[in-house]
Length: 169
Image (cartoon, rainbow, N blue to C red; front, side):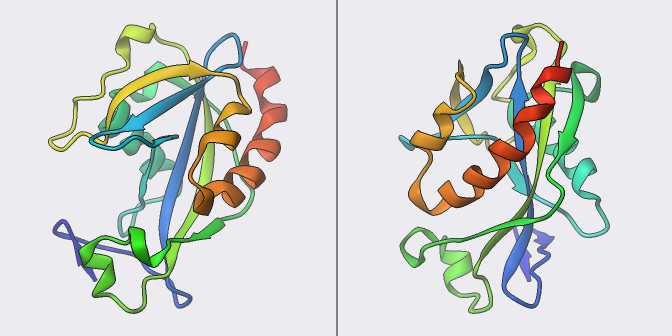
């Protein structure tokens, strides 16, 4: 399947490979970003391209979505397994509505520690930016604010990655 000119990796159960990205600061707060032209906030995330590892996709998405380079962050760890969520019919894009096999996303989550200055966070590095605002929030706050259909994945990723925060400083 093609989307935005790129072949999408959808598995036999209908899930597209994707990465979720959590960036923390020295106070163990996390970078929370607002979707452009929407009211919803979320962690950066993005698709894994063919022949690309999940980690490579995470670094690419870090740069595309929030302007951070590989040297701007330190990888603290990732979830052990892929975490899945179904995308409700009402929120699927026109492209995915015509793709009967698409069910949702399967994500590998990565926790990074920001090493660079906050001024290195840039939301306008991509041709079509994903976000228009960002802020630091308490580590657990996103669990209360994320859209309902993604909440189950957040409930699994955050507790699994939380012990790694101690290695951030």
